[in-house]
Length: 380
Image (tube, rainbow, N blue to C red):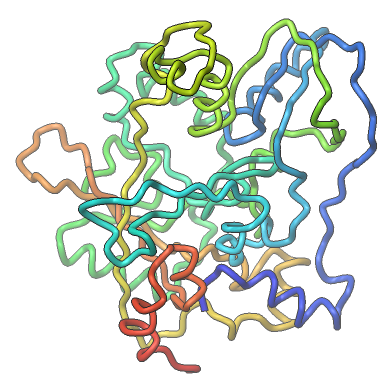
């Protein structure tokens, strides 16, 4: 079983017997209106960046800050259970974007498209992703050749948001095997990849955004608990608007507002306010390919959905349900002669059972699952 439907099955099969097991993340749903209020800052989007920006601005006691989120509050149990992170996709808290059909790849995917999940909930993608935390290679920042975005300049901000002790995580058999395989092929183990001058040739246990066994999104760490609902037609006044609606949403709002390439705006009969050619262009995202292996060592699966494990997760923050499925990471450079030593491949080792649900959220064709994976799945 993948980690996509853990939460639904756990709640259905276990909570009915133990109604007090799962902690509820309660919020204030009052219908307080904001008519007549002028804000110093309106932050659009409560994702990985927007929630933090709003939090920092609100530290100025004399400033009035409004944070707007298109999605709902993060009360769904699967958001907070790391083992259920996959079930956050293709539902109401996911915008459910897809790539356009590809010409030269994705032959095993429906319509040759990728699913491209984006968070539609407080915390944005930090509430629906797979919890992995990597700063990025220091050289990536320096290569931008912008002093204010150099790695040394960014380092103080990384340290401000991080609270980590990699020595507290026990090393299981899956990690030990992957670690040994990487070492055999020339990789070097590091206990804390964030402390390395370069990630190239390193292997390490994964660092994840979690606290006490539960997801720690920007909604958990940066947003105050009071949440007001606004009508869609309500107009709000602000002295300054900070657009942080995500990779897709920010560009979309700018384009619909008349800010973007003139030809593109005119094609859709949108009045041109500012002719800005870069808007909606230069999208970059990490590409991924999946390799499925067979193992005799038990992996995260439906076997772990027991009353004992759910109790342990909800009350102690321990047990297999605290795992997001990704155990370790490794980085390498395809061109070994590149003197910059910047890795261009990141490998993630994820020992969980890839079932039909995992293939569905990955948009693989059903026949791919039936032919290549299903024959190898067992109940053991």
